[in-house]
Each structure stands twice: as structure tokens, then as C-alpha cells.
Image (cartoon, rainbow, N blue to C red; front, side, top):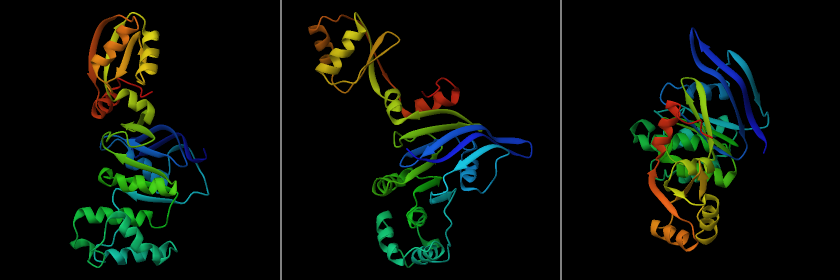
Length: 283
């Protein structure tokens, strides 16, 4: 998959404060990325660096010269005295985009009856939707949204699905499994990276079992019940996608003894906090 940009050992120092510390990451076309970290972790500084608004103090940035990016950094560039339509028209002129894209894009983000009113008189939700419409108007192949975007994620996801654009969004906490890959930043460092598939295994309702033959039990659950179980540290771990009694029954029928069972339920917030504490490396 083609690279969009790559950061190698990037650091950024403002006066005597290090806000980005030895950052290494690669972004590729067609993926959705989440950049997750608490307020002040360094998310916006990293996005500003992507956009070329700041330069690194050290390290190397490699950008694909063919990409057409669009950025919302902290908040969208909106003229509050002008109407929704006028804001869209200005963006069309700046980016040489046909005016014919305005109405369909406003419909896409759910603005249908406010496009002649000054933006300052509209609810915050409409302003957020306008900001997203402005960012998507030129049909970018790399959409970067820094700031509150979780309520607009269905629109962002649809834009990705329709266009194949890469997307990167930031959040102060892990909002759910809504990206292909997540990067976690804490105190200026990238402390973990995890894919959607790996996150699915860490955030789940599951049962951990001590059994007589974990490897045999694993195959039984996969073949007989179509359960994607795993063997972890000698224990059989199965997501509770079917009833516990059914799991017990099928193992007993196949001569696998169960010595002990315990349940666990890890949430997205649990996982995020474990990353911040350093309990997990995110792999």
C-alpha cells in the first residue's frame, strides 16, 4: 500500500519544552487512523507538523508529493459573519472547485435548510458539519481532522468508503473500534500502536478457561461453534459470542475437561488507561 507520509525520529521543542519526542510513524493510502491522547499529549503539534505549519526540531519527514490533503486543525476555518453557502463558495474559489459540489456536499453532512443564514447564528453542531463539508469539498485523498469528530464519524466513514481517501482523526480517549489503526500519544511520545483486529481481541467480553487440552479445545470451538478463541499463557480464551453453557457442553462432549472458568470484560476506556499507565505495549 502506497505511503502518504513517514516520520523518522521527529522531535519538536518549543523554547525548553519538548512537545514531540522521537516520533516514528508511517501513514498509508486508503486507511483510517486514530491519533489518541489526553489534552496536551502532543496531538495538535503532530497535526501541525503534518500540515507543514511547523517544522521539526530534529528528524526527517517524507511526504508523498502526489497527495491532496485537507486539514481541520482544532477548529475549521469559517467566516462567522458569512452564510453557510458563502463559506462554501469561498472555499470553491480558493481550491478551484466547481460550485456544483456545494449543494450535494451540504446534503452529505446533513445541512439542508440553514445555508443562507450567518454561521454565527447557527448551532454549534451545524458549524461542525460545515467545517467537515469545507474540508471534504475539494475531494481530498488525505483528510485530517484534529478536534471533536466522534459525532460526525459516520459521515467521515462514508466519505472514506465512497472515495478511498485516507483519514486521520484525533480524540482525547479511545472512542471505540472505528479506525483501521490507532496511534497512542502521551507526553509527546508515541507509546503504542494497534490495529483494528488486535484491538478486537483486547476489548471484549470473554471467558478465560483452564482446560485439560487447550490446543484441542481451541480447534473444537473454532470448528464446532465458529468461535475465534485463542490460547493465551496456557489458558483458553473465548469471546462470549455464544452462551457459556454451549461452550461447556461442546467441550465436555469432546472429552475436554474444564477446571476453572472466569469472566472478564475489557472496555475501550480500560484499554486506553492501560496504555497511558504503561501496562500494555498495544501489540
